Image (tube, rainbow, N blue to C red):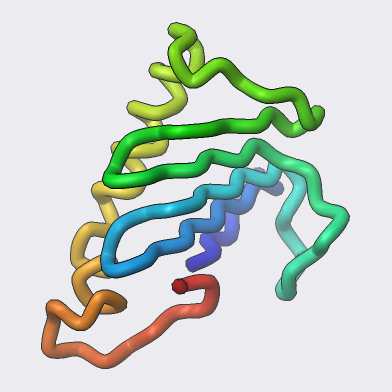
Length: 106
C-alpha cells in the first residue's frame, strides 16, 4: 500500500504486508508524483519479522543499528503508523469479509 502526501509534503510511505503483518516499510522524502515503482528511489527502509524491526537502512544507504535509541524511536513511529492500518492488514490477509487488495500488498 502506498500513501501519497497531504498538501505541502512530498513524502510517500509504502507498506508491504504478508499474511496481514508488515514485512517492509519504505519512506521516501520526495516520492510524490511517482505512481509506479522507481528502482532508483532513495529512502529509509525498514524490515520486519513477527512485528519486530530486524533491519533498517537509511536513505543514504548506511545500515541502521536496530538496537540504537534512534532505531527504537523509528520502530515505534512506524509501528504506530502500521497500527492505524490494522483493518487493512485483516483485509489483505483474508481475515475480513472484504476482498480488496491494494497496490503494494504482498
